[in-house]
Image 1 (cartoon, rainbow, N blue to C red):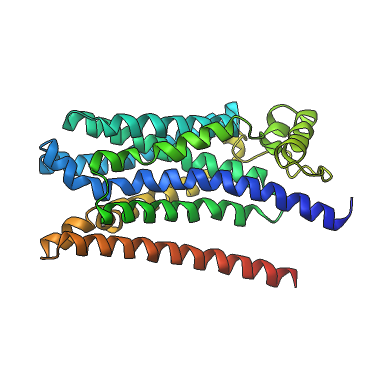
Image 2: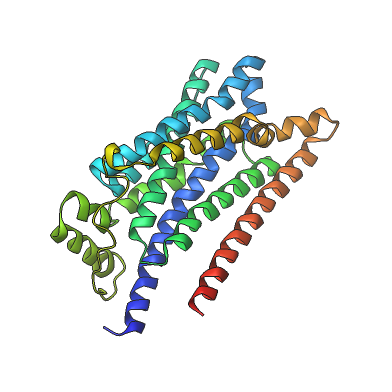
Length: 313
C-alpha cells in the first residue's frame, strides 16, 4: 500500500470519527449552556429560592466529577464505545427528565444527573478519539470535540436570545444530538489499542480492520500497535506519577468552578439585567460570549495545526 493510499485511509477514518465526536460535543455544549438561559424561567415557574437556584447550578460540577471518574473505569472495563453509548443515554434521559421537572428538588436532582452525563461524555470522547486516531492525528481529532462544544454553547445562546423556546425547551435541546450519537454508536468500531490490552493482538487487528474496511469504507492500512499497555488500563501500582495529575485536576476544577469563571458564565444574564440592561441586550451579550469562545478555540486548533506542519517541514 502506497504512502498516498495510507494517508487517504487515515483521512477517511478521521473524518468519520470527527463527525461522531462533533455530534457528542454539540450535545455536551447544549447540556451545559442550557442552564444560562433557562435559569430565570425555572426560578419563576418552580419558585426557586436563592439557595435552590445556586444549588441547581453548582450541583452540576460534582456530578461531572463523578461522571468523569466513572467514565475511565467503565471505558477500561467494558470498552470505549460502550462508555460513549452510556454517556449519550444518560444525557438523553437527563434532558428529558429536566425538561419535565415538577419541583425544585427534582430539578436539582436532574442537574446532578446531567453533570454525571457530561463527565461521562467528556472523558469517553477524548479516550475513544485518542485511541481511534492514527499516529500524529490524535490532537486534531480530540480538538474537534471542544470545537463542537463551543458550537453547542453558541447554539444555546442564539436560541435563548431569539426567545423561540421557553426554559423547559432549552433543557431539552441536548436530547436530539445525544440520541443521534447513540444511534451512530451502534455501528461505531471499538478501539484497537483497548482491544490489544484487554483482548489481545488478534482482537486488536480485527478492530483495526473494522475501523477502515467497514466503518470508513476504505482500504485497510498496515496495522501498527501503538502501545502494549494503555495508561488507563495499568494498575495503580504501575502509575507512579498518577497523584500529581490528580492533584492538578482537582486544583484546576476548583479554580474553574469556585473562583468566578464558571459562575460568571452561568449568571451572565442576571448580571446584565441587574446592571440595568434589557433582556435583549443580555441575549446579544451571551451570543457574543459564545462567538468569542468559538473563535478562541479555533485559534488554538489553528496554532496546533501550524505547529504540526512546521514539525513536518
